[in-house]
Image (cartoon, rainbow, N blue to C red):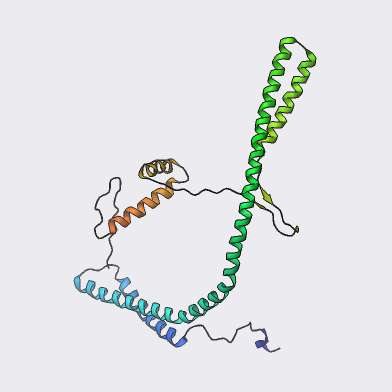
Length: 254
């Protein structure tokens, strides 16, 4: 059997970049890597001459890095452009459906909201009725105890059980649902989500106090504060001191 018959789809396709360009860049990287190894063997810099030469060498590395990045971007751009063209075309197909879906979903949401309003009102009435039955059962119990009437006592116990059943029914959550008209679609139901908004500095301080004491929020809050304080310090006119902040110096060369 011909071994070539097992080759995968696209086996003979050229790579999506210019091999000649990458080969030249690979040679340059190898050259710099070998020279860099010699520098690393020194372990440390001991005089100005070495420091100056190493400074020049790091400049060569930066220049090579930039050359490689520029080549990468140039090689990638045609593929990005093709990808953007694909996205743009298919966006013309999905956008109308997205807009239609939003409009239709709003209609369903409005209907579900009204349905939920009616369910909430029904639950309110059920809770009132359960409270009324509980009060009536308690009244019957007291009267039965006062009169020592065993029949009245049995009636009071039955009323108490009915009041308990009514309370359980009233406590059940009721969520508006919209079932599939054909049975083939999914059932939609109302759900409540929350999004925080802090309206003034006083509210911000109270929210800050909560997050600082919250087990889930404390670490994220401190990390974000550290990021903001670091950004403030690095500004051209940034503060050299911020109350409560300890600066950690990290020295490097550039």
